[in-house]
Amino acid sequence: MLDLKRLLYLIFGLCLGGGLLWILLAEVSVAEVKQALALIDYTVLGYAMGCYAIAIALRSLRWKVLLGAIVPAPYRKVLVVLIVGYAVNGLLPARLGEIARADLARSMLKLPRSKALGTIALERAVDGLTVVGLLALGLGALPAGAQYAKTLNYVLLAAAALFAAVAAVLYVLSGRSRSAAEGWLAPVVRRFGQFRDGLQILRSPSMAIAILLTLPVWAADSSSVWFVLKAVHVPLHIQQLMMTVGIVSLSTLLPTAPGFIGTYQLAFVIAVTSFGFSKVQGFAAATTSQVFILGTHCVIGITLMLINHVRLSGLFLRKAVTDTRV
Image (cartoon, rainbow, N blue to C red; front, side):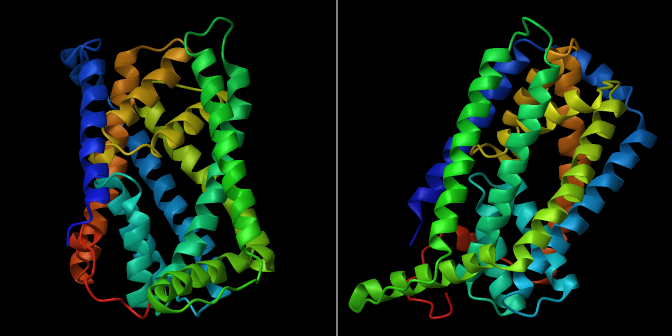
C-alpha cells in the first residue's frame, strides 16, 4: 500500500524547490552563473571535500558512541549506515534518509528500528541546537540595515523555539516509565517504548561524549562550507561563516527537491548578499556544493545501497504485515 503522506511530501518538496529555483533564476543570469562556475578554484574545492569527509567520519564516530550504549556497533558498519542515510536525505525530501538509516541499522547492526530512531532524534536535536547557536553568533556580523536582517532574526527565533521544544520533549520521554497495551494498540506502544529506550542514552555518559564530539563535527562541516565559498571567490571571516552555516543548515530542514535544489540556492544567496557579495556568487556556491560535495556523497551512498541491497521503495510503501522487529 502506498504511503500517501510521504508521497505528498515528495511532491510538495519538488514544487517548493522548483518554485524557489524559478524565482531565483528570474533574478540571476544563467550566463553569469556559468561564468562564475568556470572560475572555480579546484584546489580549494578539494580542501572542502576533504573537510566534508572528515565531518562524515566524525559524525559516524559520534553515532557509534550513542549506539554503543545499546548494542555493539562496529565503526565500519556505522559509517556505511550513516553515509547511506545522509545520501537518501540528499535524494529525497522530508528527511526520509533518517528512516532509511534506521532500517539499515536494523539489518546491519541488529538494532530495532524504533531504538535507532531514538538515537537519531538525539543526534539531530544536538545538531539543531548547535546550528541555532552558530546562527545566533553569526547574526552579529550583519552590517547595519542588512536586507534580510529581520527575516534572519525571525528564522533564529523560530528555530530556537523548535529545537528547544524538541530537546525538552526528548528529555521527558527519556524517562523509564512504560505503558502496557493489548490488541491493535500493542505494536504502536511497543514501538514507542523502543523509541524511548533509544532516548535513555540522553541520561548516560555517552551523551556527554557525543556532545563533545559535536564541536569537531561542526568545525569540519563549517570548514567545508568556508572552502566552497572561497573556491567561488567569496571570502568570509569566522562570524560571517557562522551565520552562513546556520542559515544553510536550517534550509535543509524544509521538504524540498532532491539535492536541496532551490532552498540551498536561496540560503546561500541570502547569506552572501548580506555581506556584500552578489546573488550570482551565492547561486554558484550553492551549485558547487550540491554538485561536488552532496553529489559525491550521493554517488558513494548509492553505491553502498546497491552493495547492501537497500531499496528506497520501502519508504513509500506501507507493510501489510506487522514487523515484530520494529
